[in-house]
Length: 261
Image (tube, rainbow, N blue to C red; front, top):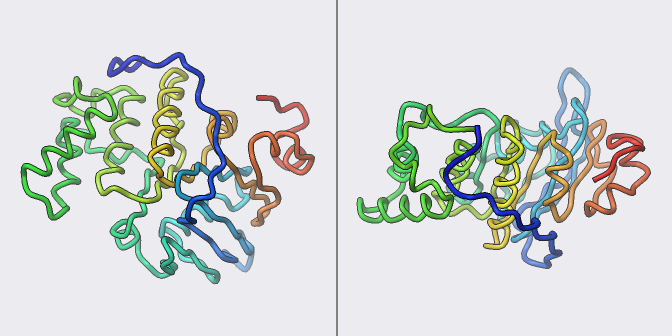
C-alpha cells in the first residue's frame, strides 16, 4: 500500500557530504563475550554531527550486538561508549535518551490503538512542557513529516511508510543529538523506502548524527557518508560507499564479487 500522506519527490537523493563537525559518538574497544566466545572483539567507531554512518555485516558478525551496546540494550564486557563527551557505558537506555540519544527499534513501537497525533503527544507528555508547548511541538512534527492529514487516523490503519514516518517523528520529540536506526527499511514498500531515505538525509542536513544498521545494503549505502563492515566481531573495513564497493575485503567477506549499485 502506497502512502498517501505526501507526494514522493522524484529528485535524486543528495550525495553524502564529508563533515568535520564535532564527534557525537565514539566506541572504544568494545567487547562482548557469549559462551566463552567474543562475538564483539574490540570495536572502535565514531559518528560526527551531520553525518550518516552505516553498520554493515552478515548475520552473526557482531553488528547487532555492537549496535545494542551503543543504545544500552546490551552491556559490554569491556570497552567504552562515549556520547557527547560523556562516558555512558554504564547508563541505562532511559538515561542515554535523556541526554540526547534517540533510538528507533526494528520492532513496531507505536501505540496501535491511538491516533497519529496521540502517539506523538504521549511521548511529549513525559517532558516538562506546558499543554500549549506540547501541542505546538506535535504540530511541528506532524508538518515536518507530512502526516498532518492522517493526524486523526488510528495507527493500526497506517501503511508501512506512514508508520515509519510516525516512528521517526516520535523519536525526534526530545530533540536528540544522535539517532540510532535499527532496520529502518524493513517492512516498507520500495516507494516508501525512498521516502524514508529522503527523511533521513534531511535530518542529517539539520546537524543530527545518525547511525543505521540494515540488511538492505543498497538502500543503506546510497545515503551514508561512511560505513563500517563488521565481520567475526571486528571492523574489517571502513569508508565511503565508493570505497567499500571497490574494496577487495568488503567484496570477499560480505558484498560479493558481483555487487553493484
